[in-house]
Length: 311
Image 1 (cartoon, rainbow, N blue to C red):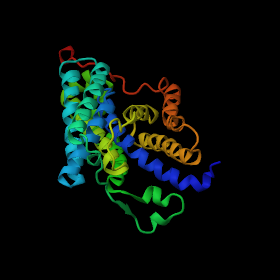
Image 2 (image 1 turned 60 degrees about the vertical axis):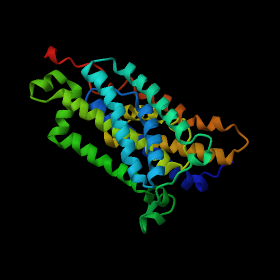
Image 3 (image 1 turned 135 degrees about the vertical axis):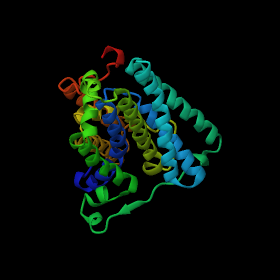
Protein backbone atom coordinates (compact mmCIF):
# COMPACT_ATOMS: atom_id res chain seq x y z
CA UNK A 1 0.00 0.00 0.00
CA UNK A 2 1.08 3.57 -0.68
CA UNK A 3 2.11 5.70 2.29
CA UNK A 4 0.45 8.96 1.24
CA UNK A 5 2.53 11.27 3.44
CA UNK A 6 5.76 9.68 2.23
CA UNK A 7 4.67 9.97 -1.37
CA UNK A 8 3.28 13.52 -0.97
CA UNK A 9 6.51 15.39 -1.92
CA UNK A 10 6.77 13.30 -5.09
CA UNK A 11 3.10 13.88 -5.89
CA UNK A 12 3.40 17.63 -5.37
CA UNK A 13 6.56 17.87 -7.48
CA UNK A 14 4.90 15.89 -10.28
CA UNK A 15 1.80 18.07 -9.83
CA UNK A 16 3.75 21.26 -10.52
CA UNK A 17 5.58 19.81 -13.51
CA UNK A 18 2.35 18.42 -14.91
CA UNK A 19 0.45 21.67 -14.36
CA UNK A 20 2.81 24.00 -16.25
CA UNK A 21 2.18 22.80 -19.85
CA UNK A 22 -1.57 22.72 -19.19
CA UNK A 23 -1.42 26.19 -17.62
CA UNK A 24 0.43 27.72 -20.57
CA UNK A 25 -1.96 26.25 -23.14
CA UNK A 26 -4.99 27.20 -21.03
CA UNK A 27 -3.83 30.82 -20.66
CA UNK A 28 -3.51 30.95 -24.44
CA UNK A 29 -7.06 29.62 -24.71
CA UNK A 30 -8.27 32.29 -22.26
CA UNK A 31 -6.97 34.97 -24.65
CA UNK A 32 -8.66 33.18 -27.54
CA UNK A 33 -12.06 32.60 -25.91
CA UNK A 34 -12.17 36.09 -24.40
CA UNK A 35 -12.06 37.24 -28.03
CA UNK A 36 -14.87 34.85 -29.00
CA UNK A 37 -12.70 32.11 -30.54
CA UNK A 38 -13.07 28.56 -29.24
CA UNK A 39 -9.83 26.94 -30.36
CA UNK A 40 -9.96 23.19 -29.83
CA UNK A 41 -6.71 22.85 -31.81
CA UNK A 42 -4.53 23.23 -28.69
CA UNK A 43 -3.50 19.59 -28.88
CA UNK A 44 -2.06 20.07 -32.35
CA UNK A 45 -0.33 23.34 -31.48
CA UNK A 46 1.26 21.74 -28.41
CA UNK A 47 2.43 18.83 -30.56
CA UNK A 48 4.20 21.10 -33.04
CA UNK A 49 5.67 23.13 -30.18
CA UNK A 50 7.00 20.01 -28.48
CA UNK A 51 8.78 18.79 -31.61
CA UNK A 52 10.14 22.14 -32.82
CA UNK A 53 11.36 23.07 -29.34
CA UNK A 54 13.13 19.73 -29.00
CA UNK A 55 14.65 19.66 -32.50
CA UNK A 56 15.83 23.29 -32.59
CA UNK A 57 17.11 23.14 -29.00
CA UNK A 58 19.11 20.01 -29.78
CA UNK A 59 20.51 21.29 -33.07
CA UNK A 60 21.63 24.73 -31.88
CA UNK A 61 22.47 23.74 -28.31
CA UNK A 62 20.36 26.54 -26.82
CA UNK A 63 17.07 25.49 -25.26
CA UNK A 64 15.75 29.06 -25.08
CA UNK A 65 16.20 29.44 -28.82
CA UNK A 66 14.31 26.15 -29.18
CA UNK A 67 11.50 27.59 -27.06
CA UNK A 68 11.29 30.80 -29.10
CA UNK A 69 11.26 28.96 -32.43
CA UNK A 70 8.60 26.59 -31.05
CA UNK A 71 6.44 29.58 -30.12
CA UNK A 72 6.94 31.00 -33.61
CA UNK A 73 5.87 27.66 -35.11
CA UNK A 74 2.77 27.69 -32.90
CA UNK A 75 1.93 31.21 -34.07
CA UNK A 76 2.25 30.21 -37.73
CA UNK A 77 0.00 27.18 -37.26
CA UNK A 78 -2.59 29.21 -35.38
CA UNK A 79 -2.56 31.98 -37.96
CA UNK A 80 -3.94 29.36 -40.33
CA UNK A 81 -6.76 28.88 -37.81
CA UNK A 82 -7.20 32.67 -37.61
CA UNK A 83 -7.41 33.05 -41.39
CA UNK A 84 -10.06 30.34 -41.66
CA UNK A 85 -12.20 31.39 -38.70
CA UNK A 86 -11.80 35.18 -38.63
CA UNK A 87 -11.28 36.10 -42.29
CA UNK A 88 -13.26 33.30 -43.94
CA UNK A 89 -15.69 32.84 -41.00
CA UNK A 90 -15.31 29.04 -41.15
CA UNK A 91 -16.62 26.86 -38.34
CA UNK A 92 -14.25 27.13 -35.38
CA UNK A 93 -14.68 23.55 -34.15
CA UNK A 94 -14.09 22.02 -37.58
CA UNK A 95 -11.03 24.23 -38.15
CA UNK A 96 -9.65 23.34 -34.71
CA UNK A 97 -10.02 19.63 -35.43
CA UNK A 98 -8.21 20.16 -38.74
CA UNK A 99 -5.34 21.74 -36.79
CA UNK A 100 -5.35 18.71 -34.47
CA UNK A 101 -4.89 16.45 -37.50
CA UNK A 102 -2.43 18.60 -39.46
CA UNK A 103 0.00 19.72 -36.75
CA UNK A 104 0.73 16.29 -35.17
CA UNK A 105 1.21 14.89 -38.68
CA UNK A 106 3.81 17.60 -39.39
CA UNK A 107 5.47 16.82 -36.06
CA UNK A 108 5.55 13.09 -36.86
CA UNK A 109 7.03 13.76 -40.30
CA UNK A 110 9.70 15.96 -38.72
CA UNK A 111 10.36 13.35 -36.05
CA UNK A 112 10.97 10.64 -38.68
CA UNK A 113 13.38 12.93 -40.54
CA UNK A 114 15.19 14.14 -37.43
CA UNK A 115 15.43 10.92 -35.43
CA UNK A 116 15.34 8.34 -38.21
CA UNK A 117 16.81 4.97 -37.27
CA UNK A 118 19.14 6.46 -34.65
CA UNK A 119 17.23 6.41 -31.35
CA UNK A 120 19.99 8.51 -29.73
CA UNK A 121 18.69 11.51 -31.67
CA UNK A 122 15.46 11.31 -29.64
CA UNK A 123 17.26 12.39 -26.44
CA UNK A 124 18.04 16.03 -25.79
CA UNK A 125 18.96 18.36 -22.95
CA UNK A 126 16.76 19.72 -20.18
CA UNK A 127 16.55 23.13 -18.57
CA UNK A 128 18.19 23.19 -15.16
CA UNK A 129 16.09 23.65 -12.04
CA UNK A 130 16.64 26.85 -10.06
CA UNK A 131 16.21 26.31 -6.31
CA UNK A 132 15.21 29.41 -4.33
CA UNK A 133 17.41 29.47 -1.19
CA UNK A 134 15.46 28.85 1.99
CA UNK A 135 12.08 28.36 0.32
CA UNK A 136 13.17 25.21 -1.49
CA UNK A 137 13.93 23.60 1.88
CA UNK A 138 10.36 23.89 3.18
CA UNK A 139 9.07 20.38 3.95
CA UNK A 140 6.77 18.81 1.38
CA UNK A 141 6.16 21.92 -0.77
CA UNK A 142 9.71 23.30 -1.05
CA UNK A 143 10.97 21.29 -4.01
CA UNK A 144 7.53 21.24 -5.63
CA UNK A 145 7.14 25.03 -5.89
CA UNK A 146 10.56 26.57 -5.30
CA UNK A 147 12.93 24.26 -7.17
CA UNK A 148 11.57 24.56 -10.69
CA UNK A 149 12.90 25.62 -14.07
CA UNK A 150 12.87 29.28 -15.05
CA UNK A 151 10.18 28.55 -17.63
CA UNK A 152 7.93 27.17 -14.87
CA UNK A 153 8.46 30.29 -12.75
CA UNK A 154 7.67 32.51 -15.73
CA UNK A 155 4.48 30.53 -16.35
CA UNK A 156 3.23 31.15 -12.82
CA UNK A 157 4.23 34.83 -12.96
CA UNK A 158 2.16 35.14 -16.12
CA UNK A 159 -1.05 34.36 -14.18
CA UNK A 160 -1.34 37.65 -12.21
CA UNK A 161 -0.22 39.59 -15.31
CA UNK A 162 -3.01 38.10 -17.44
CA UNK A 163 -5.55 38.52 -14.64
CA UNK A 164 -4.62 42.18 -14.15
CA UNK A 165 -4.70 42.80 -17.90
CA UNK A 166 -8.30 41.63 -18.28
CA UNK A 167 -9.59 43.32 -15.13
CA UNK A 168 -7.81 46.68 -15.05
CA UNK A 169 -6.37 47.56 -18.47
CA UNK A 170 -8.57 49.35 -20.97
CA UNK A 171 -7.25 47.05 -23.70
CA UNK A 172 -8.21 44.02 -21.60
CA UNK A 173 -11.74 45.33 -21.03
CA UNK A 174 -12.05 46.04 -24.75
CA UNK A 175 -10.80 42.53 -25.44
CA UNK A 176 -13.52 41.07 -23.22
CA UNK A 177 -16.17 43.13 -24.98
CA UNK A 178 -15.17 41.49 -28.28
CA UNK A 179 -15.97 38.10 -26.79
CA UNK A 180 -19.27 39.29 -25.36
CA UNK A 181 -20.68 41.44 -28.16
CA UNK A 182 -18.34 42.09 -31.11
CA UNK A 183 -20.84 44.26 -33.00
CA UNK A 184 -21.26 46.58 -30.02
CA UNK A 185 -17.48 46.63 -29.58
CA UNK A 186 -17.05 47.65 -33.23
CA UNK A 187 -19.40 50.62 -32.76
CA UNK A 188 -17.13 51.79 -29.92
CA UNK A 189 -14.16 51.93 -32.28
CA UNK A 190 -12.60 48.58 -31.35
CA UNK A 191 -11.04 46.73 -34.26
CA UNK A 192 -12.63 43.32 -33.65
CA UNK A 193 -10.73 41.53 -36.41
CA UNK A 194 -7.39 42.81 -35.12
CA UNK A 195 -8.20 41.69 -31.56
CA UNK A 196 -9.13 38.23 -32.80
CA UNK A 197 -5.90 37.92 -34.78
CA UNK A 198 -3.82 39.05 -31.79
CA UNK A 199 -5.70 36.51 -29.66
CA UNK A 200 -4.72 33.77 -32.12
CA UNK A 201 -1.08 34.88 -32.04
CA UNK A 202 -0.95 34.77 -28.23
CA UNK A 203 -2.86 31.49 -28.09
CA UNK A 204 -0.50 29.87 -30.60
CA UNK A 205 2.61 31.13 -28.81
CA UNK A 206 1.49 30.03 -25.33
CA UNK A 207 0.13 26.65 -26.41
CA UNK A 208 3.36 25.91 -28.30
CA UNK A 209 5.36 26.97 -25.23
CA UNK A 210 3.33 24.46 -23.23
CA UNK A 211 4.25 21.76 -25.71
CA UNK A 212 7.91 22.81 -25.71
CA UNK A 213 7.93 22.59 -21.90
CA UNK A 214 7.30 18.85 -22.22
CA UNK A 215 10.49 18.27 -24.22
CA UNK A 216 12.69 20.98 -22.71
CA UNK A 217 11.80 20.61 -19.01
CA UNK A 218 9.49 17.66 -18.35
CA UNK A 219 11.48 14.90 -20.08
CA UNK A 220 14.63 14.88 -22.24
CA UNK A 221 13.26 12.11 -24.48
CA UNK A 222 11.00 13.02 -27.39
CA UNK A 223 8.40 10.46 -28.43
CA UNK A 224 5.58 10.69 -30.92
CA UNK A 225 2.35 11.58 -29.11
CA UNK A 226 4.17 13.12 -26.14
CA UNK A 227 1.35 15.65 -25.59
CA UNK A 228 -1.03 12.79 -24.68
CA UNK A 229 -4.27 14.77 -24.63
CA UNK A 230 -2.99 17.69 -22.55
CA UNK A 231 -4.39 20.12 -25.11
CA UNK A 232 -7.90 18.82 -24.46
CA UNK A 233 -7.29 18.92 -20.71
CA UNK A 234 -6.28 22.58 -21.14
CA UNK A 235 -9.65 23.23 -22.81
CA UNK A 236 -11.40 21.64 -19.84
CA UNK A 237 -9.22 23.70 -17.52
CA UNK A 238 -10.49 26.94 -19.07
CA UNK A 239 -14.09 25.89 -18.44
CA UNK A 240 -13.29 24.57 -14.96
CA UNK A 241 -11.41 27.82 -14.18
CA UNK A 242 -14.33 29.95 -15.44
CA UNK A 243 -12.31 31.75 -18.12
CA UNK A 244 -10.08 33.56 -15.59
CA UNK A 245 -6.31 33.30 -15.23
CA UNK A 246 -6.44 32.62 -11.47
CA UNK A 247 -9.15 29.99 -11.94
CA UNK A 248 -7.12 28.36 -14.70
CA UNK A 249 -4.09 28.20 -12.37
CA UNK A 250 -6.11 26.44 -9.68
CA UNK A 251 -7.64 24.04 -12.19
CA UNK A 252 -4.22 23.30 -13.75
CA UNK A 253 -2.75 22.48 -10.35
CA UNK A 254 -5.73 20.23 -9.60
CA UNK A 255 -5.30 18.35 -12.86
CA UNK A 256 -1.56 18.24 -12.19
CA UNK A 257 -2.24 16.72 -8.77
CA UNK A 258 -4.09 13.82 -10.34
CA UNK A 259 -1.23 13.43 -12.81
CA UNK A 260 1.20 13.28 -9.88
CA UNK A 261 -1.07 10.81 -8.10
CA UNK A 262 -0.94 8.67 -11.21
CA UNK A 263 2.90 8.62 -11.03
CA UNK A 264 2.89 7.75 -7.32
CA UNK A 265 0.36 4.94 -7.76
CA UNK A 266 2.38 3.44 -10.60
CA UNK A 267 5.42 3.29 -8.31
CA UNK A 268 3.44 1.75 -5.44
CA UNK A 269 1.41 -0.78 -7.40
CA UNK A 270 3.86 -2.01 -10.02
CA UNK A 271 1.94 -5.21 -10.68
CA UNK A 272 -1.19 -3.31 -11.73
CA UNK A 273 -1.72 -2.27 -15.39
CA UNK A 274 0.00 1.07 -16.04
CA UNK A 275 -2.80 2.37 -18.24
CA UNK A 276 -5.25 1.98 -15.36
CA UNK A 277 -3.42 4.71 -13.45
CA UNK A 278 -2.67 6.84 -16.51
CA UNK A 279 -6.37 7.32 -17.17
CA UNK A 280 -6.94 9.05 -13.78
CA UNK A 281 -6.35 12.66 -15.03
CA UNK A 282 -8.61 12.07 -18.04
CA UNK A 283 -11.40 10.58 -15.95
CA UNK A 284 -11.23 13.64 -13.72
CA UNK A 285 -11.40 15.84 -16.84
CA UNK A 286 -14.65 14.18 -17.88
CA UNK A 287 -16.11 14.55 -14.38
CA UNK A 288 -15.13 18.24 -14.28
CA UNK A 289 -16.80 18.90 -17.63
CA UNK A 290 -19.99 17.10 -16.59
CA UNK A 291 -20.39 19.28 -13.50
CA UNK A 292 -19.09 22.62 -14.79
CA UNK A 293 -19.59 22.83 -18.56
CA UNK A 294 -23.37 23.31 -18.46
CA UNK A 295 -23.36 25.83 -15.60
CA UNK A 296 -20.88 28.33 -17.04
CA UNK A 297 -21.33 29.24 -20.69
CA UNK A 298 -18.35 31.59 -21.00
CA UNK A 299 -18.27 34.70 -23.23
CA UNK A 300 -21.59 35.11 -25.07
CA UNK A 301 -20.10 35.38 -28.57
CA UNK A 302 -17.88 32.32 -28.11
CA UNK A 303 -17.72 30.16 -31.22
CA UNK A 304 -19.81 32.53 -33.34
CA UNK A 305 -18.39 33.84 -36.62
CA UNK A 306 -18.14 37.61 -36.89
CA UNK A 307 -19.40 39.25 -40.09
CA UNK A 308 -18.35 42.88 -40.12
CA UNK A 309 -20.96 43.88 -42.69
CA UNK A 310 -23.73 42.94 -40.22
CA UNK A 311 -22.86 45.93 -38.04
